Structures are given as C-alpha cells and as structure tokens.
Image (cartoon, rainbow over the protein chains, first blue to last red):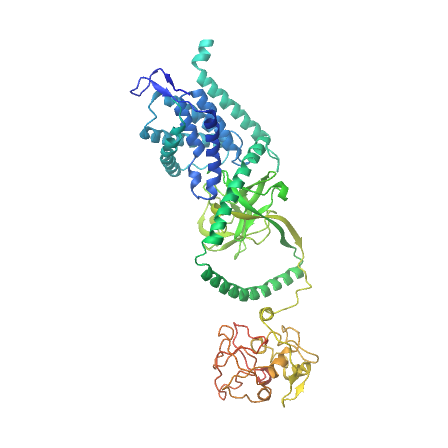
Length: 180
Length: 451
C-alpha cells in the first residue's frame, strides 16, 4: 500500500500537502475488534478502566490517519454500533453509533486541515473530541430517548485527560500499522 | 446536480448515516423488545464474542490457579491455623444462632408465614462487561443451556449482585444493582423501613422512597425485602453510608453494596426459589447449649449411683434430686440436664429430655486431685477417674475459683469450705462438657438451696 498525497486545501498547517495513510484490511477489521474485546474484558479486572474508551481512540486514529470524512463516518458508525451491541438492553443500538459517526467525521475533517502527527496536537484532539463525544451521547440519550443522564464537568474533564494520555500511547502503537 | 452532490458528498453521507441511525433508534424506542427477547444482531455479536472472553478468562484462571495452588504457597500454614480458629469460633456462634433461627421458624409456623428458600444455584464466571461507564451490565459464562432465564437473581456469598436481563445460548447478561436502570426492593435491617434501592449513572446506589421524618443511621444494614419477586427475602444488600434530606419529602440514603460489584469474578445464579412453610416437625425446643454439646464428644451414659454409692437406674435418680427448676441450669448440669423423667416436674421453658443430668451429677464425673470432697450425696458419688485438664475457653471459672465446665460434683457446693479447685479440668473421656461457655457454673442440683 502506498500513501496518497492530498493537495493543500485551506489547511492551517505549514505543510502544503498532507499524507494520507492507508491500512491493510486485516488491520482495519481486527484493530477495532481487539479494542472492543479489551474494552469489555479489562473492566472485570481493573476497576477504573471504563474511563478509558478504546473504541473511541481507535475511531479518532483511523479518521485522522485516513483523512477521508466519508470513511471516517463509516468507521465511526461501525465501531459505535459494535459498542452499542454490548451496552445492554437499556441502550438502544445507535447511541454510540451516532456519537462516533460525528466524531469520525469531525476528526477526519480536522485531519485535512491541521497537522495531527505530533503528540501535542494528538493530545488536544483527543481531549476535545472526548468532550464532544460525551456531549453528543448526552444529547442523544437525553434529547432523543429521554433518559436520565448526569452531566458532570469534573468527571468528563478527568476522563478526557485520561483518554488523551492513554491515546498518545495507543496512537504510537497504531502508527506501526500505517502503510505509506 | 452532480456538482452539488460532489461538493457536499461528505455532508450528505454524514446526514444519511445519522438519519438511518436515528430512524433505527426511533424504531427501537417505539417497539421495545419484550422481556427475554433479544435482538438478533445482538445475539450474533455476543455469541461470537463471549466464547473468546470465556476462553481468556478460563486460561487466566488456569494459570493463576496453577501458580497459587501449587507454587506460591507462602503463608498457607498460618492462614490454615487462623481459619481453623475461626471455624471453632463460628461453630459456637452457629450453635447460638441456630436456636434463634429455630425460634423464628416456630413463630413463622404459628403465624402461617411462607418462607422463601434458595433451592438451586448455578455458579458462573464473570467474563465481561459493557465496557462503558454509561452501562454497567456484566456477562457471565452460563446461559440458556445451563438453565438460566431472565429475571433470575444473581448473588454472591456476601450479598446480591443483580438480575439476569438477557440470556444467550452460552452466556447471559446481568444488570447489577448499581446500574442506573436497576431497582431492588430493600428493607433496613433494624428499623424495617422499606424502600427501593436504585443505581445511578456513576455507579452509586441509593435507597429511595423512605420518608424524611424517619430516622436512619449510617452503618445500618440493608436487606432484600422480597417485594420485587426476584430476590429472596433477607439477603444482604449493603450498608448505609450516608443519610441526607432529599427532595420530595424523601431521604437520600446512600448505600454501599455488600458485594464488590466492580471486582466480581464468580457469582451464583439463583435458578430455583421455593416458598414453603417451615417444617414444624424438627422444631422441638432445643437450647443452644444442647446444639453445642451435640458437636462435642460424648460417652455412653453410665448407671447412676445413689447417695450411698450404690448403683441405681439413671432415670430414677433424676426425679428424686431435681425438683422443678432447681437442678435444671444448663451450665451446671450439662446439655441434657434439665430433661424430666417419669414423675419429675419440669419448670416452664425447660426442655423435657433424658436423664443424663442425674447420671452425670451422681456418677461418671471427674474429681481433680487436691480437690476437697464435697459434702452430701455428691461426695460419695465421685468416680475416681484420671484427672485431666481442659482449656479455659471451654470451662470458665466460677466466681469462687472452681472450674465450672464440669458437672456439679466438682464445683464446691459451699464456697467457703471448699478447697479451690484447679481451674483447668478436662472432662472424662467421652464426657460431654455441660457448660454453656457464656454462663458460669452453678452448684449441683442436689445441693442447691431451694428457692
């Protein structure tokens, strides 16, 4: 696989062209599945692990690496729906799906405009998108389904920080699967 | 048109995907799945994933078990000693509680209460979670093939966990009590106030619908009330940690669950609960001391002797020297001491039983060397057996210094003229220590002043 070079279109980065990475099909299939398996298994052993949202991190990684809003939407939708499948009967299919679809679209759109390769921008992107992710989920649950939800800024800020830190390591690990 | 589609392709795709999911949400909300019904796609996904999770969990358990059971055995002996001591303590406690339980069952029988019994349980391993903070459901490795059904209670030895909400062929989904969609009928142990235990999004549990004018203290235990018809009545739920005035005239009572819901490994699924009347056949009044004595070694009853030292039938000896209530103290006369024989009068509340009282009070007892012979009948009836010592825990000393665990012949009848007996006396081989450890000994029945 080779990386394509997209023309510069009003980017805020200093580069004139941004590289678009591609991934092998096994990586595209098994990395989200593995993230999901870890996400549902580790909390039985580690108490506070549910703060970390590995499917969300994988969605962001694929979206910003591929820099294609359509594929970002589809990737987010599939990963979100898979997450919904395990969330219990009180969570209708689509709650995480909608949220991660929007995140995938925004992340890939942002990836077209700014440099998302360095750790600082990755940290910020993850932090901000986690808050957006929680906001969209809250909107869907509260607005569409009338479910009682508690919005705690402090909790979300801590969770976003944890995800941003863990995201740095996860992204560094997943960079190995990029194909230029 | 092509230009429009090409220009806004990304947004159109996004809108289409979102629209499809919103329609899907609306359909699910409009037609929620019935109880026990599972959407096919969920069934497929969970059926595909849970075997992998189960294999990982069992492999981990195998490795850990091999390490901890065969290799890393440091401290096992000390732990074993401690556990044995704990078992001994619990046996005594169990004897005491058994009598309370029998009494409660007698009362229930009299009042016609039906009691719920957990008859069958299935042990299951927790193999996964929802993986999100918004949902706290758990997955266990037992499903429909193991007889699991929806709305079955899931418990641990320390307390309740939740209930089954979805069943798959080889796995099932558990809604724990701290999930925001969970509700359990609960009752406060001391005040007997009933409420509903509800979970929350952040995993805390609160007892709701208890009026604010009620007094609830932190530390009080919370039990299941049985009102939800899922959990049997009386199972431990948790403990009150804080009580605050809430809204709408109700208290906001925060409860910490008894089970470690965030670190569950193995649970029990209650597959069968039966309701039946307590069986009154086995509920003859038995004292805690008797139950305790049953667990201790006994010897065959020897024939009794009269005051002159001549052997006499045991059953005749009882009535003669044990009028109503006088010699019936359990601490002085043994577990079967106050059981009347033919012709003997029994005080109210005294259990009618065998003649061991007189047998032991007149014969078969042990005299400790250095102990001054007692006056009266008991003096002549002491059997010269080899003295032994016993643990002080079994036989607490009497106020006058005599050992109280033995039968009355050893205790000085008149404290002023008796030589202080050794404090540690072991019963003769096979002899049942008659003492309730909680009660000091009393002099033998035959020498007791009549009230």
